[in-house]
Image (cartoon, rainbow, N blue to C red; front, top):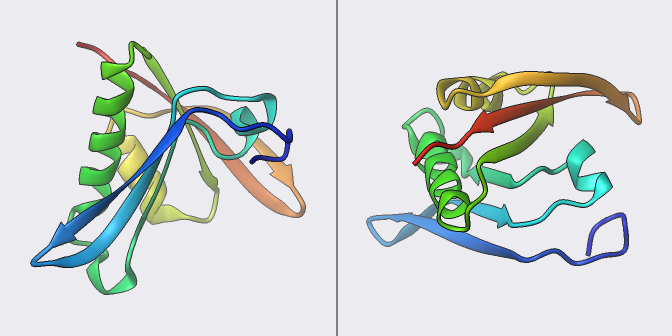
Length: 117
């Protein structure tokens, strides 16, 4: 459940390398008002031991493909402005900065990624 008190259709997938979970991605197929501000369609994370190896790009790519399969043509992603690694991954996947705002003393950024067939 999110801050709106609502559930949205979603799935969580894990990425393995040599039988070890290296990261995960949550794909949300609908967005509430709060998810448009903080959360977006895709949230991903990579275990610290496996960062910098391209797994973040793989996870975001998987999330984008799943959204494409559901007919979603534009993905919304958010991150802290200070999270340079996440911003690099989003930009590498053609993210365009849509908004910058502050929530509880944290500067957040929202990016849009057009999903083509």
